Length: 187
Image 1 (cartoon, helix red, strand yellow):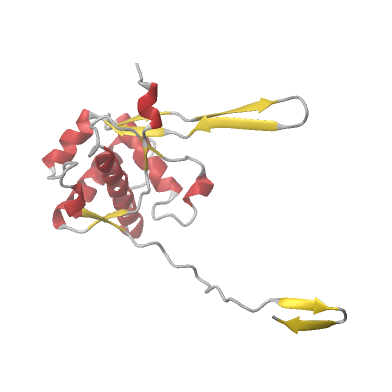
Image 2 (tube, one colour; image 1 turned 120 degrees about the horizontal axis):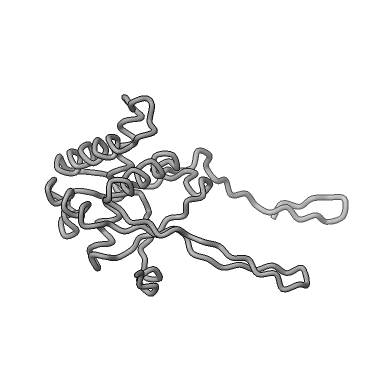
């Protein structure tokens, strides 16, 4: 039975954690390899850059789950599964869904599906409410992480937040233009 109040106290999965130690990098490789072995539908093996990005995605998900466990071992984390929410994110939608799907199959992660309910008040006004999908680490994941030297207490030593990507175009501030009849006046 799910404690509904625990779902409300979930931590947002920012997916911006990257390994900074050899232990962290080795864990990412091992966790990604374990997840890749659980992907039954995958026809071709990831190689090169795709493999590296999948390893980083696996590490980012794991780091967020371990950071949530710093507060309480059974604490939930949340992340929207809408593809548009991953635009510009350090982890792609395809990699994230591959990681959490395989982790679910392997018994590493529990998922509580999100929902959205619309209410029509009859006068053309429609409102809605809901919750995004929640995830939490299961004991098998905590054991796997501990075997590779990661615990909720040590996660901050092995993973750091990545700096956000800067925009491609610089924002240029210009003075306002005031229209005074047929003439324009620079403000």
